[in-house]
Image (tube, rainbow, N blue to C red; front, side):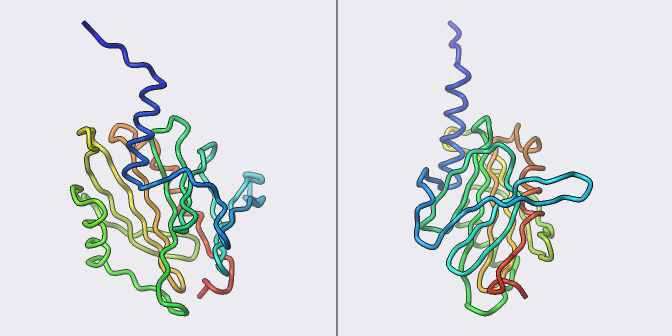
Length: 200
């Protein structure tokens, strides 16, 4: 006897997988000194789009969020996340505080150690440079598996800022990874600091 799996069940199932791997919650953006606001952004030859300003404490960043993705967050951890329309892929932006007043230095060995702790069963397939607007960092591509054995891919990007590091994470089923990779690249590539507290 063949069992028929409903499409809505699959969407919920993959949403749970992505949430577990990213460590997300559905908490609302109500934490003190943590705000998201929308701002029109003019793109030459493309018109005006909606960008997002992320503000925590005295720091501000601007980026272009993935279109029509659902917002989820852990405001108490200075973390903003988006869930794809089909609920199978998640992208997270997290600001990790460092030494106040100093530009953070990224070291491959240190980042690899952090990745190993966060994704102990993952294999790093590739390491390469990544760029925001006026910013350069490091990125990693991982292969791992969910608790049910499903193959998953992870893309991690790290951008140094004054007083910390911005971490970007995308977790996706292996068969959806390439389909959504451009959405992740657009978020990272559009990211830039606005406030003097984080600019060089």
